[in-house]
Length: 167
Image (cartoon, rainbow, N blue to C red; front, side, top):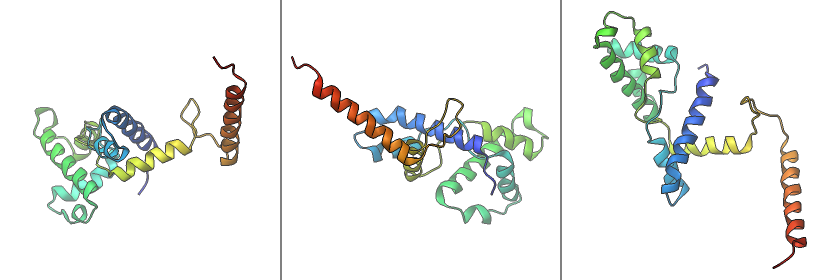
């Protein structure tokens, strides 16, 4: 399966925004993760081509491929299937191709992120361990350089605390 990295980046950004919006109201990080993934998502995080390849057999009555998927992905495709049916009944979409309707359905808001709270944990770890420049490109900074920079900052703070006048 080919990945669309723009969609992946948008997924990460939106999931972190959802996490940041619910985290202050949670006592534990695990609870915040669980609430964040159940927040409404701005879109379905799948390309229109991937969705069409899965939804086309569903419209012919073959649900076997979707029924073998993991629960979150299965719920996503059934939700998308229902969204496409709703859109196809609207006047603007009558007589349009499946590809055309799926393009609109994929970019419409989703009821949730359709991922587990473990995915949220992985996204947080990835963003914490990787540095990005202003354009969103990953900077290639070796771990030992980052560790050295942290140690250097810690030493500077210790010097400031040691030599600061006490009142």
